[in-house]
Image (cartoon, rainbow over the protein chains, first blue to last red):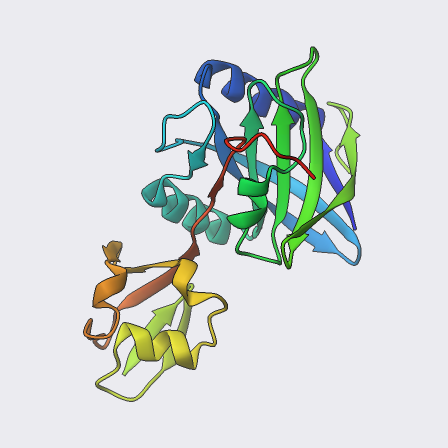
Length: 142
Length: 74
């Protein structure tokens, strides 16, 4: 599986993550799937109700509103993203334990390095496997 | 009765509860699913008794959370 995302959406996630510091930030990703390619068409920057530097939970009301927006725009829910303010862009045991949707793509953005590092994962049966992530230039309309 | 489930109208027998709908819809890992009916969230300990009515709109949302709290990475 290859995940394709626009640079502008990566920038938006990074800005959201920086604004949430010292806490973790989170959100949802939506788009479309074409065979083994997932295109992220929209990123939803949502509230971490845990307000924690080491944990996140997506606000269920914002989650519900995002799902309705996806449906209204013909987008499919693809997964979520969250930031690691001080640690690498890899799933922690907690990330794996709480990854309940095997169909989801999990993006993790680390602010531990500059520039931020973004990686994508599939998590199923208590194991995480990296996915290929391609970042499209700002001008790429696909 | 007609329910709208995840945006799709569907027909069901009357007298359905949230837990029965979860079963009929074969929702995966239901213990981690949040359910809303007409935009109101249903407490999980009420799934067995929460009755659904004609015209209700139901959404299933997977809890999404995690974090770097344990410092252990794959």
